[in-house]
Length: 167
Ligand SMILES: CC(C)(COP(=O)(O)OP(=O)(O)OC[C@H]1O[C@@H](n2cnc3c(N)ncnc32)[C@H](O)[C@@H]1OP(=O)(O)O)[C@@H](O)C(=O)NCCC(=O)NCCS
Image 1 (cartoon, rainbow, N blue to C red):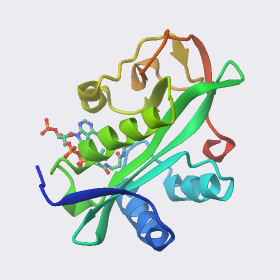
Image 2 (tube, rainbow, N blue to C red):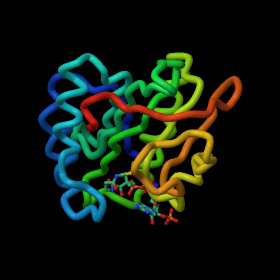
Image 3 (cartoon, rainbow, N blue to C red):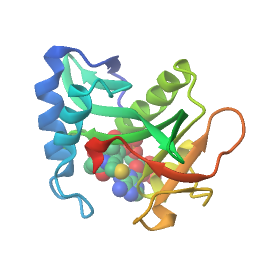
Image 4 (cartoon, helix red, strand yellow):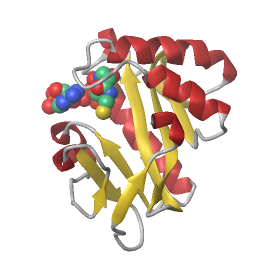
């Protein structure tokens, strides 16, 4: 676990570094079409980046996480999508991704989030409480990879729609 990490909200000076880290992190990802950095720009341009945090070590940006609102059955009901999350390759496996995810979940809780969804490896995200429950469905993806975390209230069910930046 890297002890010298600061997790901070993104500022304008971080945008370039965030883009580079996102490109580098997803470069060899088997399920990526390498558009994650474009998604971030589109979300930012549409004021739809609800939470955007950077991980810094000695003022260098080494990781990033974003959250944006999702619709459930065509309605915004305070649920968020976690995507993308990226850690600079040489800093991976030092706990930085975990710190970003935990801080990001705290940040959406401060926005009164009721829950969060993501598409990713169950083996990794289970440790933060995410589960492929089946109540929430993202069309066109294998259900075992589409995971959710209830933060407050009752578990909704239905179809999830991410911001149009993801389509
Ligand atoms: C996924 C990512 C953000 C994790 O960040 P990180 O700082 O490396 O993760 P942490 O150090 O907090 O956790 C490391 C642990 O996660 C596991 N892990 C990392 N990526 C994983 C994956 N894709 N599938 C399963 N386990 C994974 C590691 O094996 C390690 O396990 P251990 O704790 O049992 O040893 C980072 O690896 C990354 O940027 N990957 C490329 C982009 C990406 O895949 N983003 C997520 C898309 S859903």
